[in-house]
Image (cartoon, rainbow, N blue to C red):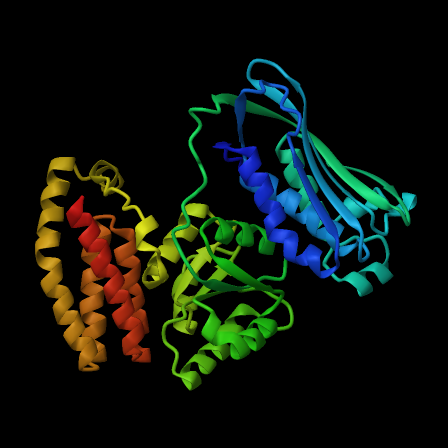
Length: 425
């Protein structure tokens, strides 16, 4: 795992965790409290911007809070407390803690609880479920960030998980501080199937930050059941490839059967896998997936997948075009900027007519010609490092045999939007 250091507002980021878990807490009438830097030791007239790997940090806190809610009886209390203890000119020591009034952990089990696949006892696993991986992964992440995850617990009274981290910070005037909250570029609901709790929590955070609601299930069979009952509510499906009970490949086949029976063509299915092996993508597309995302999930690649398949659902008012970077493309292709610009101009001059030809082949169900035309266009696109357009033409070539006009036409529309954006730059 790598650390990604970015600036973040602790108030916005940590309060968002509470929002993600409020529904779960309300189901058990648990009082969920979030206390963030209530004593600002830096300057009462300044706001704090921290520098760190906020995604991994939120992953840990979300897992600790989820466990606390899970193991706390009804009418209990769970408190997330983030406080600053020491600071100098550029570095501050923060203590993160999650405390609950739950079942607690027996003293003799407290060291073992951080080991993979370990819980306090077998009856706990039967009653509350879970793989026991969450705390082990959280411990590893905290160590990666430079801290140590610790536990204080009394059986029958509750537990407190806590750790310290040194984080760099910046001070900002309240008067000049701008709202840094991310724009929500998408609208919709996503079905996510993954058998590892912490993976579910990570993708839920990422999707939430992009304005999307998610429904989480632990295996392919549950995904099929939920999709069959609520297919009209979903805009996209993520399926982990390796899951117990039913894997992602089988679940994809069954969901596609439901889509065919219900005459649905506009709900893409994306494969999630940690095993990124050459040829995997083609194999998944041939199996009926519409796209592929490798783990650990990269936020930019996730955005690209959503941008590709959720274009009709985007809130146009909030969407900003990303400038086409000719210098970056020139560097990637090893073509001098002057010549790259000339090749790009030629590409843009011919591509509209070539797409019209492809559209005619699609309308006439000319599968061999669809494949030939898409293959040709993906080749010229990748030569100019137009990766997203290349991916779409590749998908059209592979999925031409399925003869789903609406799906192919949807991909053509996305290509046209991308080309329009390049021309406008």
